[in-house]
Image (cartoon, rainbow, N blue to C red; front, side):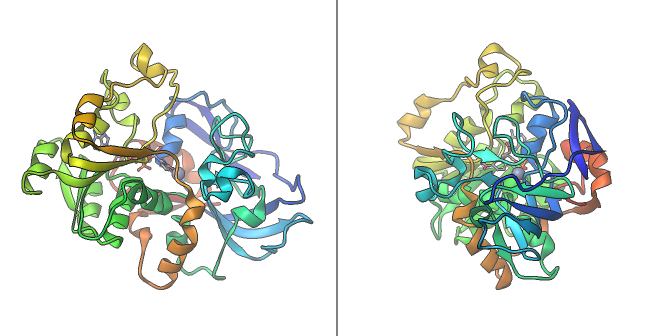
Length: 376
Ligand code: NAD
Ligand code: ZN
């Protein structure tokens, strides 16, 4: 089959690879109809990880079940399904508690599994014609048949639940003010989710005009950090108190990219922008190792976090990969009911063959490349 294969930093290619097949009775084989490129893919694409040449990328997958193993009862060939980016077993302690991003079975010795992701287990990615889905009864979410809402449903594998998770980590409640760092697809979904949850004011910080425009389009307040002092602006617009809650949807890549020495800057500015006793939800990714980091500490995931100010303000923080399965059914049903339409972030639907160019442009945050869905 054809698949998006990682070659070297800043280079992917569409190549023929071996077809995946049913390996365990609990597996399904899915023919991919939509698979999106994610900011998380850029960590590998830009060479910030130990990803080896030859791996197939793609963890934001949906499609049609082609074949199921003998032990699969919940889905059958022909079913339209979305797969959470987390590969999870459904029966370990963490899965039973709903923390499927931290499944203890699928990737022993590491926190959780994912498709097409370095260090997240031996699971091939779905930027390809077919995908093997382990524990298919647990990892397939059934969707209504047909092709309606394809772009909306394509956001259910990762960024819509991840944005929602950010608001859950920060415990966003009706009437609260929220500041989101990053207007990438994840930050926009976090802002959208905060508004769905009834936030009174949502600030979104970035410097890419087309992304800030999308934030404004959904009713958030865009803050361009290249033009104004974001913390000052937010403090002023919250009667001098700071926002109730803060969300980091940038993570570690922010400053690594800009060549600065201090990769925790986003988190530190959230500590300043949130009022005393507020809460931070951190979904932007911080990695325990980065071969290309600007300094030795950053290379080992040791970043300068301002614990002093964080402690003094009595802030709380929650972090980590999103437990997609905890929210994907409810978010699917909001889409079906016409109450949510996360596809506003999707700027392009392209054939799989266009992946190399799409990666290049998404990586540069070019206008019109806020979220790309590939169609094998
Ligand atoms: P992205 O790279 O497209 O978005 C990041 C945005 O942050 C960009 O628009 C960039 O302009 C902006 N930015 C950079 N520096 C900034 C700064 N100093 N202040 C404010 N904004 C700044 O990626 P994305 O797809 O939106 O993903 C965002 C992060 O979320 C990534 O780290 C990704 O790995 C992570 N992620 C986490 C999960 C999870 O489960 N926790 C899931 C998906 C993605
Ligand atoms: Zn993703």
